[in-house]
Amino acid sequence: MAGAALLALALGVYWPALAAGTVWDDGLFVFENAVIRSPGGLRDIWLTTRLMDYYPVTSSLFWLEWRLFGPDPAPYHGVQVALHALSALVAWRVLRRLAVPGAFVAAAAFAVHPVAVEVAAWISETKTTLSFLLFGLALGAYLRFEEGERPRWYAAALGLFLLALLAKTSVVALPAVLLLLAWWRRGRIGREDLWRSLPFFGLSLALGLLTVQQQQLHAIGTLEVRPEGLASRVAAAGWGLCFYAWKLLVPVRLSAVYPRWEVDPSWPPAWAPLAAALALAALAWRGRAGPGRPCLAAFGYFALMLAPVLGFVAFGFHRYSLVADHLVYPAMIGPVALAVAAAARWLEGRRPAAWQRAGLALALLAPLAALAQQRVHVFHDHQSLWSATLAANPRAWVAHYNLGVAIDRAGDSRAAIPHFRRVLELHPEHAEAHDALGRALRRDGRLDEAIPHHRRAIELEPRFAAAHNHLGNALRARGDLEGAIRHYRLALEIAPDLEEARVNLERALREQDRTR
Image (tube, rainbow, N blue to C red; front, side):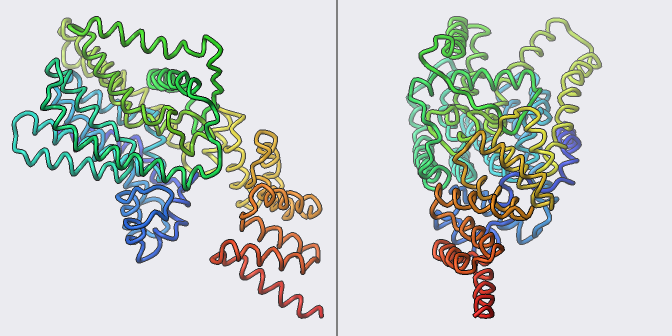
């Protein structure tokens, strides 16, 4: 009954997501992805690195969903919400096995926490929920093995961890978490613990390196997404830890894209967050014989799970911000469980009645659930997401760009133009924004203004096939068929599968024949 109540709570909060559409990169990963749509796509998913990330378990799920649901986003949202609810259920069972006080309330708080909405209401983040669910199952299987059950549970843990990494490598810290839990439960890390963890470390290293390689190949390329030096990155890691802890404690003014910090390591206050985190860790270590021990375990888990995304390794999202709600999802259960366990221990000495305990749990969960459901509506569509993002972070150039694209696609090119111009004020070398502005200006009948922006996009990215095609359209509209044909051909040289450029070229050639 408790498990059913937990699932019902999560599903109740996220029910509005079922009426939502697609946002941000849902098209890139699912709905416009040729590999996902192809009947033979499973081969490419598992045996090639054509996709942006090598997450074949998640991509296979998307491939299957496309066969079952087609382009209707509602069932995809249903699967995503169900994965989040199941993750909360597994978190509860693991916390119970670890004898954490208030395990059910902690799992419920995780389920309805507003910070989790970015993952639970965004189809592309299926990779995060699926990976965390498999991570929880792997951890639960390992704990059963440790408690003396059959060795097959160790094999199950290793297999589930491999599947979790193949869903998304955000859970690479599991082997370090296993050692942390060994210390927390027994007060030491034995030689046997180290030997048992070695295969897990091997999987983490192999799949982690592959993810870094894929990011460099597809998401980063020649972009310098983290120009800061090592000292700046180390200082910024402290900012990240404190930022995430604060958002879990006070989940307001959440944003899909937070302001991107510029951390100057020569400025002494820049090191204050990291110094504070280390001081708290040292204080907890001194009290490890008492309350410091669970604090070290919870925040150790938090730091370990966040370590891959704190900026020591660059990845594509760093172009926009150094932090994001979806990055903290696998780590958030640690501080949440610690806070609830501390409250449960405090209540034990006061012997409250059952109705009083239920009232206190409701007082925690109700505000979180209300804020979460409010945030779910933000992820309804592109315009709602990016409008809300700009309200929280007006300098988010990626939000201006995506909002402009959404408005332009809705047929209001004139209203999209200011957003593209704002992108270029904040990020002058954004080739896609130059191209998008050129398209919007052309649709608004301002060809002389449009053409220089298409040319600038091509200067910034000479192999930008779509920009060549759009420049061809602008030249053709101005009567320059020869120039248009040249750029259509260049577009097809770069991207032979660009059907729009092929159709445009055929039309331009027919028009040229008629004028001769």
